[in-house]
Image 1 (cartoon, rainbow, N blue to C red):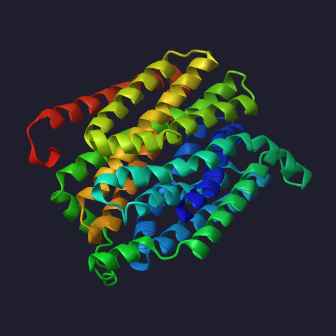
Image 2 (spheres, one colour):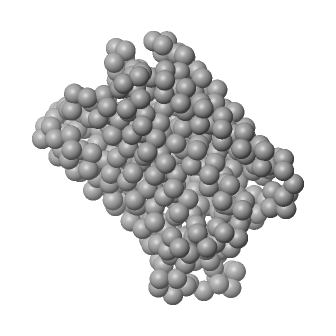
Image 3 (cartoon, rainbow, N blue to C red):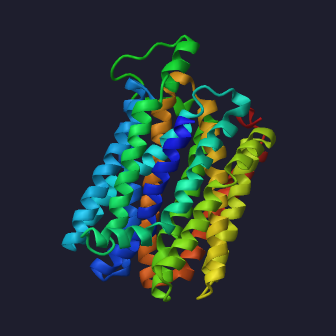
Length: 401
């Protein structure tokens, strides 16, 4: 319940920034290519904070890790408000890097839900925390315009209000985690497993995570699919507000489209979790690749049809949900408890580095070749990953049995 509550309020902060960041950078810089760096900055921030969050979790429990991530997001929002007031897009990008802490906290929370889960229910427990993001994440983009109006009444410049509102949301999430996440799930799991807290510096490094992954082929494959799913989703989603803005859509339309996309990401996650536990994690990963491929095809051929872009974004969210829920559960159940924080942190680092790279490439592609070409490139990447996973899955191998 505590993790779910933090996800709800934290999801508001993430979603408000998500809906407006690329549009604000586009207006301040006057460049579509540079606007793509808004999504890059947020995803890069989540990547940079993944390992510190994992390290803090390993040493002080999940409460310490989540608190660090939410505090960074709060600071990032404050910097973003200042940057918009100064009309300084480089400073705004710097603030958005720290805002990525909200995403880092959200991602770390899903792993927290598996600390005490039986193996045959890990995906369902994980998916419930993911699902809790629905309320805040869907409401967030639609709160952007009212928050902007309230902010201007309070003396903030236009489009600074939503980031101030996001700061309040992250502050509330921080209070929830610090005050109510007791007992700490990771510490309790270690006690029940008879595994004491490791000493400082142990099981907290990238090297340790890689060594653990060398003995767990299932976890390695899951990491690849999580990274592909996230790259595809972030690349298309980050440039959609810019496309709609250039097509003449207002903030209400952009907010609605992003809200429906986020609903696709989270609303059906409990169903995805149940299916992953019943049918298997790998089949659900294959399903996710099929949904992402369909989304890329729809987005690439949408033209100026807002309804088709909306449909593509919903499918994009569903495909991401399959990849994240099934892949994350597969990672957690494949590695020993003492090595989980390090491997989970590396998983979030890789997925967000790939996502950040994807947004850079996406901004360049849309700026030079158009939104349709972005759909084609993403479709080719997803199709290749799906074919590889299907081939590996059907090949006789003890770790995929």
